[in-house]
Length: 110
Image (cartoon, rainbow, N blue to C red; front, side, top):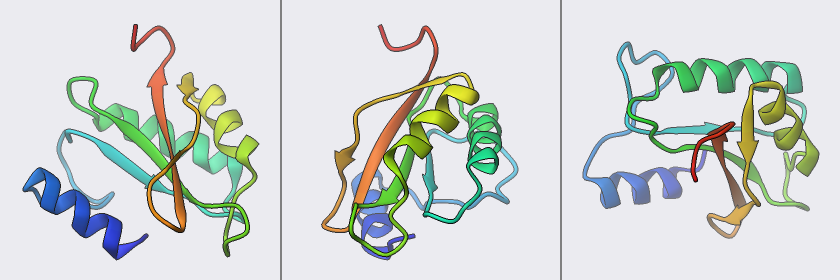
C-alpha cells in the first residue's frame, strides 16, 4: 500500500480507511495488488470485496506502474476481474508509482 495515496483519500473523503478485517458494509474498496500475488486469489479477493460493498460503491485495484518493483502484468487484473464477473476499465494513473483500475459488475455503469 502507499501511505501517500491512503492519506490523500482520507483527506478527500474525511473518513478513515479500514482494512479487510472490518466487519460491516463499506462505501468503496481499494485492493492493492503486486506481481507475484496469485491471480486466482485476486479473483477471490474481488468477489469478497464486492460482497461487502454497499450501494454499488467504487471498487478499485491498484498496482505498481510498469517498470516499478512489484508491477503486475496488465492482463492479470483484467483476467481476474472477468473471472470474478466484473468489467475492468482502462488503467488510470493514481500517483507516480501506482495505476488504478476501476471494476464494475457486468451490466453496471450504464
